[in-house]
Length: 95
Image (cartoon, rainbow, N blue to C red):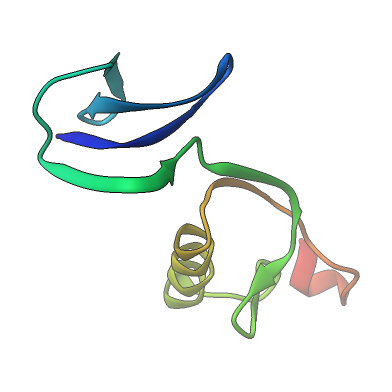
């Protein structure tokens, strides 16, 4: 997949193309793209290092469906990784 837009890079912002499969394969100044985002920004995902949950779910007490709900919420807001934190709770909920 190749996407085109304004790339947020360590050395600045410029128009370009990102090619990726599961990982970024390359960054190019010119060429064809499968999707052209025009002047929209394309940048790295956020990493949340202090996160207890969301959408009415917490990592303490969620099941698989609750976990999916939390992680879908993260992705929709640009967070691609998170460190699941537990909150103060009853011992059986955190062990």
